[in-house]
Image (cartoon, rainbow, N blue to C red; front, side, top):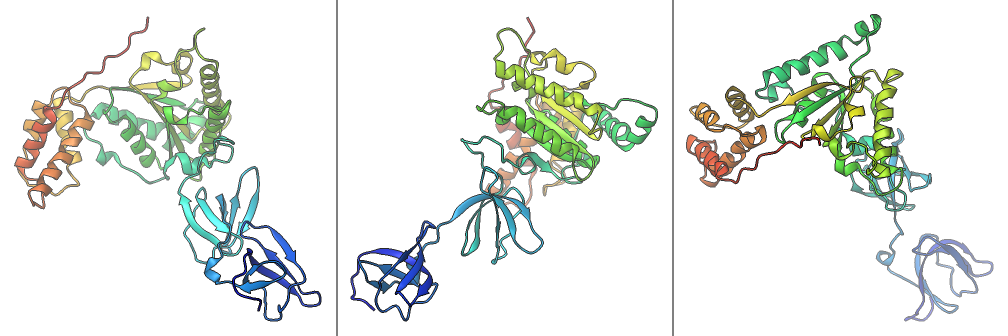
Length: 409
């Protein structure tokens, strides 16, 4: 070998040509090159890590070499153990997975050519500030429950009239869809859930998806808005396309806080807002030709602010109002919410239900969270009556703010 103490670059040997004392190498950033007229290279083999200086070289420890890694989104998991990744702008590559790392479509992974997959960086696609959502996998981003997964009607307390309407929807629109088509009836396209926050609108939408064996796509109005021109509309189109092509043949697209993306259009409305409402109307109208097994459910506590073109029959056909729970509703909500906890047998559920006039379902459910914290703090393994009462008293002392509905001018 050459003299010690060489100052040079770190290379991985790819090929050795002994005839002219030349090595072909790879740098750590993935580039390739060659170095000629090197002495004493008889013992150099492909894969060796060396430091090359001015016409000389020396062997380097292997742990100094760091393979240049890349970041990409998984598009396919192949049967042979390889994965097809997308590095952006349609740049696909087949990558080995020798360590058997568990990956799914839509995962963002780190890999290099020498070692294959190294790790999963994100379970969901990472939005690019340069490319918008062009490469986003909408199922990983917005699919919350697969068909047959999620809560059931047993997990929903109170509101018997609302539950009856939800069951009617499942039975007539999904279970008997063929009968509707046979008599030429148009299926329900959309359902609007209205009412104050915390009354169970999102919870019931997930239950409908589970009970109807439908995939559940959840879209939060504020989260879907993008600053890039046309990006939000494009994402909506992809979501509806994924829903209409769901594996189960049934899907529910749920918009939470739909008022944030579908407000009344006026002369003062921003052009982007007008385009977004128009896109949503077009997508819902498209159900006449395909996707009859797709139902759109939207929730809002500002129904008067929605664009009237969206709320008319033919788009959102049904409107189901979630008022504040009655006394009997409150008792059922407390009973259902506590059914999964270890509790004493003599909790004062009826008394608390009588004292919580004006409370939402979310506030009632939170009593159990506070009660469990108190029980654990006192070293108990079940919620005792004193825990439940003290939890109610704690929440009752919180400032209460009423939600005032906006009145259209």
